Image (cartoon, rainbow, N blue to C red; front, side):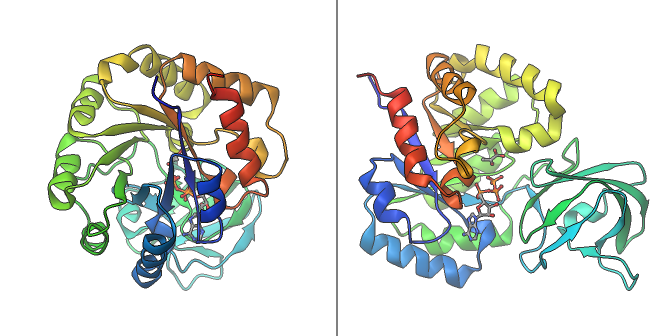
Length: 314
Ligand SMILES: Nc1ncnc2c1ncn2[C@@H]1O[C@H](COP(=O)(O)OP(=O)(O)OP(=O)(O)O)[C@@H](O)[C@H]1O
Ligand SMILES: CC(=O)C(=O)O
C-alpha cells in the first residue's frame, strides 16, 4: 500500500532537517512570500542540505495583498481603503488585478475569511470598504472575492521567471494555485518538465476538475480558499460531492488547509481533527498538506508526528 503523504510547508531553511528526520514525504515552499533573490538562495541551500522533493507553490490566479504591505490592526466598524489613495484612512495594498472587479456591496475576504470587508464605493484607483470582521493585516496574505473573477490561461511573467530559475533542480515539482483549466497545467508542465499538483481553490464543474486532473500529476483540495469562496455550507456541499467522486480523478488527491489547525498554537490536535484525518484517509485521500502548522506554528514536529500516528497502517 502506498504511504500516506505528508507535505510540510516551511517558510525558511530552519525546519528542513527536522522535517526530513520526521519522514515527511515532501516539503512545500510558497514563492508568493519572498522575492526572487530570497527564493534562489533558499533553493541553493535546499540543494545542498535536503533530499526530499520540494513543491514550489506558484501564485497562478490567486489574489494576494502586496508583499510590501505594512502590518496593522483594523477594527470592526471602521472604514479602510483598498488600493492606493491620499484619503486619511488605513490603506490595504491589494493585487491590482482585483481592483477592477470591486463594486459597491461586494464582500472581500482576507486570510481565508479571518478578516471580512464590504465594499462601499469603488473608483478606478481605489475602493473604500467597511470592516465587517477586523484583525491584523499582514503582507502577502490571500484575498478572496467570490466567485473568483480571473481564469488564467497562461502563467504570469513572475511565475514563468520562477520556473526558469528553479526547474534545473531535480528535486523540484510545482503546486499551481487557483487552477481553472487544464491548459494552465499543460503550459507549466511543458515549460518545466516537472510534476505539477493542481490546487482546487474555487468551485468548478466536476468534468473541468477531471480535465485538470488528466493534465496534472496530483490534485490538492484546498479548504482554506474554498472556505473563503463558498462559505460554510458551500464548502461542505462541495467537499461531499468532490469526495464521493474522488476515484474518477485517477490521480493522488491531497487534502490541504487547516488539517491540524489547532496545533498551530497547541501541542495536541482536537479529537475532531484526528478523527477527521482518519476519515480523509479512508475516503481515498492520498495525503495531507500542512500549512500554518509547520510554516509558523509552535509545534511543527509534533504535528507531523500526529499525522504519522493517526494514519500509519501499523
Ligand atoms: N517564505 C515565507 N516567508 C515568510 N512567511 C511565510 C513564507 N511561507 C509561508 N509563510 C507564512 O506562513 C503562512 C502559511 O503559508 P502558506 O503558504 O501555507 O499560506 P498562504 O499564504 O495562505 O497560501 P496558500 O493559500 O497558497 O496556502 C503564510 O500565510 C505566511 O504567513
Ligand atoms: C493550502 C491552500 O492553498 C488552501 O487551503 O487554500
